[in-house]
Amino acid sequence: MIFKLFLHGNPQRDILDIISETLNEVFNIVGKPTLGMVEVHVFESDSSFKGCITVEAKKANVSSVEDLGFPVIHQCWTGIPKIFISVERLSRYDEDLQRAMIEHEAGHAILHGSLEYYIVNVPNWFRSSIGNEDLALKLIYLTSIAVKDSEVTELLAKKGFSESQLKLGLYMLKPSEDELIAKKLLGTNRRAKLVFAYSMLKPIAFVSPLRKYKKDEVDKALMNYIITLMPELKDHFEALSSELKDPSLDFQEDLHRALKRLRDLNKTILET
Image 1 (tube, one colour):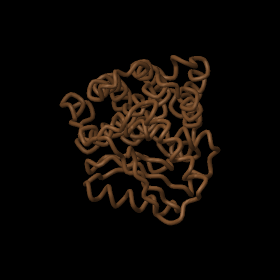
Image 2: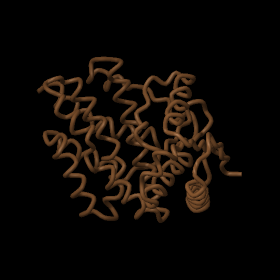
Image 3: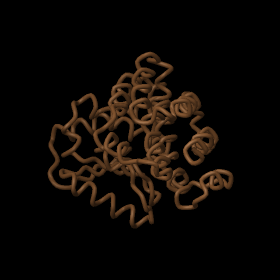
Image 4: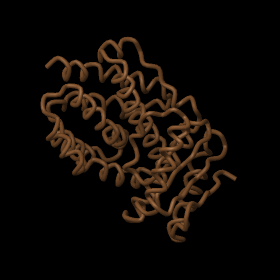
């Protein structure tokens, strides 16, 4: 058994079928989960979904969970790979996006389904460039999420899932209402600007490998996202995207490459 379903409440039967079909397809075509099996927790309600993830995070002493805006999440904080799915929220998307989201999190179970991918050391030179230990840890965490997303996109695209991941990536590059509001509230707070810039890394990293498949379409959406939210950092984001266009799938190596690129971004924000 590659995955085991755990139902919380009474999720819709048609969504359960999509979940099982998609997971079977990815694990049969792309590969098996890192540890051979993954728990898949399917929640009828969004409140139960968020509540369970929050409890899991506290048990593992995880202080920040950045992905709760998505209806499908993979994590391995306790050493057991798990995929959490909010059927209430997932059902708001069309079936293509539903499948693309499930594919992506299955990709994490294949590439990042063990505890080693959730333990990241802060390099001294990065800590020095930030000047604040807690802030450096948060930024490393946001960077690690982005890097892992680029690796999953690379893996899935190579295995024939580029079209579905492209649709999801283009959706992620549409600036959200929350992002537009947050941008207006930044003011001159350099720390807030830094966190906001790093929160943009996830969609940028996600689509970067897809530039090899649909360059014009991806580049146009990527530039629109960057120009809309932080045009002053366009060169830095472009450099990072180019770096993550060909991830090695060695997480520590890819993370180090990304952090080196982000050193200049840190300097631009903190010294201007």
